Length: 338
Image (tube, rainbow, N blue to C red; front, side, top):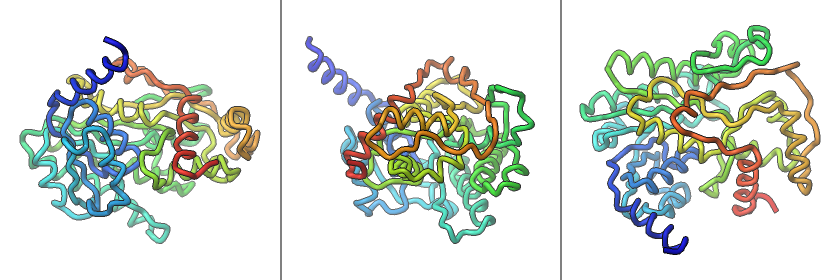
């Protein structure tokens, strides 16, 4: 059998495997779209929730995925409407909660925190009603791990899943996204424990890679800005972990399918200071106006991540070169870069 025929046979074989039905919340999002793609390829029937299934512009990329016409359903659900997820969750044996509330610049700190926490709890309340639910995989963030006063870290510390960011520190520097993610994840753990829900959390670092949709979310817009010479965002990021979006999708599926997976899983490939990232990108993509250096606004940062927990389950991470090469090709393909 030649390679092409073999690949075709493999795709057919996967499409014929029924892996059960799973729910992906916020299915049209950057990470969720890739998760839907990989779940369909693995033979799952996917029930995706979106705010407006009839918005063709927002969901067209999902219907273009292999297997979508046979094994994808899109239904309406809103994070801030209690009971909105009941029907979707009740139809499934697994839930991937990737959705985050849409936060506008006019939202107050209180509205942002209330949206993040209650949005997560609304999904979990629906999960509680399904006695046949096997597992819930929550998409959290490395922001729940790394945000502390640098003076509290020993030099070259490797942060692991036992580390939690400081709410007080995040409040002092007004990083409300971090506060929202910390409180939402902690609320999820508390609710899951009280209601005997099998919960596993994935904590991605800064997600880089191809955008399936032609519409760009905040993360991809930040990357696009850097390639256009707009450095403000990445300067404020300082030292940051980076991970390929395909690895994030694979991580979600891996912890869902591994029976003895439990707790939190940091999903990260490499950690770079913003200055080192700029130097690397300027050299690799000389045709773009990327500065060769960025100012260091936080002083010396040396932390890294211990990813041995997810690596033990078999996940191997793509490198920085591949994630940014793929991101650039995607931005070119969608017409954002020449």
